[in-house]
Image (tube, rainbow, N blue to C red):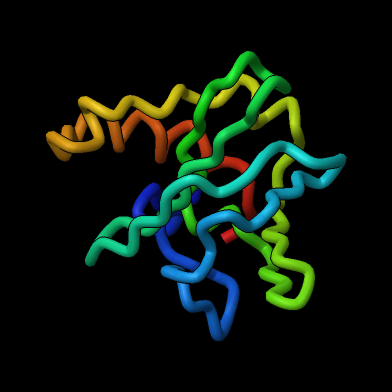
Length: 118
């Protein structure tokens, strides 16, 4: 069973998170959107992906641990999850994000925690 805390840690090496805003995001089976926001907090790293029209303009929190690769030349981030897994992920909630609601982050981390072999 993966530790939920690990889902929030960047696995990709040599990553400068502040430079990722605007990068395209690719799931294992195709394009899902662009990075709208990046957070590199002490215990919780993630990107917020704007999915555009693909899932009706929803934004998704993508924990750093499900990012497999960053291609700076192509300005693309590659995930270890599928489009379907992103589609059914918890919505990004600006209010809960800015209030640092631990229950919200536990819910998001729990959802993504099973998608990677830690």
